[in-house]
Image (cartoon, rainbow over all chains, first blue to last red; front, side, top):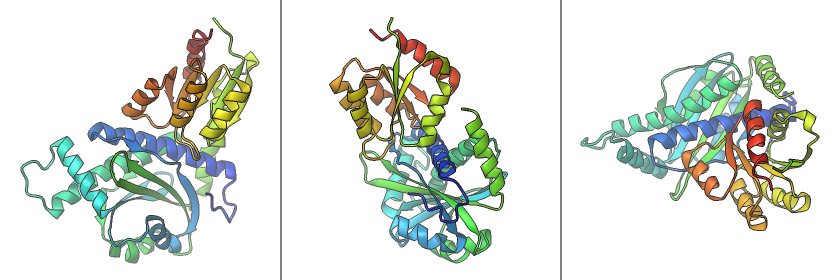
Length: 214
Length: 125
């Protein structure tokens, strides 16, 4: 479960990060379930340390290829900077959009178009990643600012994603959770990729979180 | 009113188990048992017969939902407090239907945990 080969974090720090991600995604799911009538089945999050240059391959392996995936990307920054990537298989994306339209009335009476579908997908991404990242930040006594989310093409992810955000050889911390919508063949992956430029800030925040319970 | 002597804490996260223990008053002489998944929780419940069980829901091997069902099957009087990150309304409805005493949201807060213990103490025979 934990790939911490550089010993940058202790097992306990990794475990605490997983727990914080678990709490944060729980909040995000509850927020989405208030907007659309679904039940989100949560899974145990994972934390991994990776070289930035290996991220795209890793993500591709995790979601089983990229050909039929849409990715909603949102950058954020507080004491550390990061990127949220929400990946849906094409079929899941279409079904989610259909549920969203039905439950929110958004796009009613409009012709279906890629542009409208992308807008809805962005809205869903905004709810999930916004709530998740904000809750994590709150628990770690940070405040984050977001750039607007956008739907990325596979080419953008594979060609420019890493180079524009991180040094190729830089270590990043990757938090991953998989979620499923109950009673539907619908699942997605959320990846939070955080820079380790300010690793001491993150470690201090984790220590402070523990202090609450000592 | 019964007295709580034994508490079972079920969570796959070591940190989460530490956090809940940190919220429980230390001067009451409680005996603690821990389990890291639902299956171990059921075993521990049967062996140790805790007065109160704090149960997470999202766990590997066996979820908290399944563990609650099995524990309640074994002991319908089991006092279970769900402590979860999954705060969807449907989750609360489901575990309530399974007969849990109450649902607390993560992260645990000392005052809420202490209050929960006082309330469930009243449920013990």
